[in-house]
Image (cartoon, rainbow, N blue to C red; front, side, top):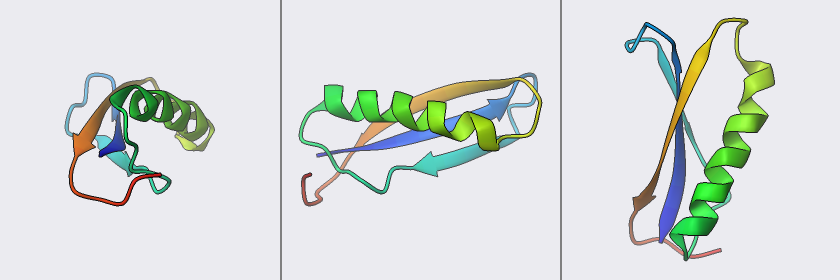
Length: 67
């Protein structure tokens, strides 16, 4: 099972990051998890302060109930 995690970091400030963990998953396939991570990043942009951010994501594995 895969859970999507998105990290939004202010460019040039690797210590200024925000972590977002998906609450819809986990997902059976990594491709579905990755698609959800991109969806999450797009959704969070309007809520961020007006500064340049760099986004990172990962699909973390674990023993959870699939969706």
